[in-house]
Image (tube, rainbow, N blue to C red):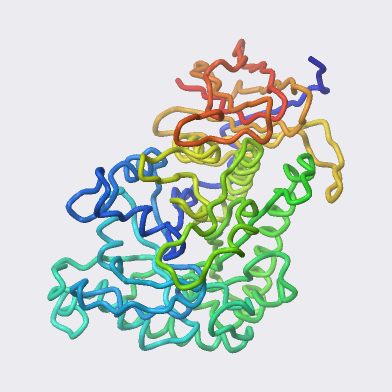
Length: 501
């Protein structure tokens, strides 16, 4: 097998980027397609518990160790009346769901989802409707969820069978309000004014909450990054986060260019940070705004199929991308990019979690892991602690859209509590292995635990309920001697090299 020039890395425990907020491993459940109905909730399924939740799905969610899940949208939230989804199920209305043109039966709502997150060992990131509604609906929902008792909405929650408040901490002020496709689409100033007044009212109800202001719904938006500057000019002192959304695809079947798209993601994050810091300087504020990358994933396989679906059905199979091996590599690279920015990206949500552009698929016959499940699981399991800044040199290449792309994409995490170090390393070269030398002498007395590899000769290999073609193995070549790791990173591979004391 041909070989590239060697990649080198120096890892030192004192070269710290920041503590990693575990919520960067969050996810997203929208009332869209089969994410809720036929995904997390299917009362007639053999695995369903007394609440109607599929336990086979919950077990896979637990394997991913998802700390927070955004809900109920997404585009759907911009015309959603939260009151439709509480109270006796037989009295809940069926509504035209305008974002995805389906019928919403409202069998799952705020209380059910809060219950599901408890069973999945997670927490809720709640979005409020700033499309067709505003301050009143948001403050009332917050009172319903978080106020203990003795008021109209808190007592209504108790009447509905939930005595204890849900204590939801994180709230999104609308969704993608810069998008012309959004119901209730607004200009930056219209959104900024509504968002800041909603934020002020919500903080009066519960001062302990965190708030996320809507950023651009993608780096390609013509208003980016002016939208961030204008909206934060209104919301800066009242919110804690600004959101980022970005999806990638390989529509041109150019795999080298596809695997370089995290160069674009890195630029997106840096531009939003710069814009936040500009508004901080403009306002002479001591406050730093953090980033919530609360929609990110690969999304392109299902788009043709979705144009052929009939409208106004319940839970049709929408956005059901079947992910291949190269998609898993890009997802790994996206996770690496989030870790590299752990100082400012404090929350992130892979969109979405089940069936809809998701790592987990649920069918009648059972649930199964898509290819992208594995890098997500590895990062969530071993990417907790401190994000370190390795000194890296790597051979470079150019693609159609990007220049000087390193073949080695990497992040390093130091878990002081467990005395573990994890190197996440992607070899972007499609046909040659990449020799890696990593100097880890800073971690004296550490031993090599394992070198896991996700690789496949077929970039287009996919998993299914009956066959798992893409899954990791533990036979990586890494060796540690005198504080130096030597490893061969297979062509087009995702690698997890773990050390422990």
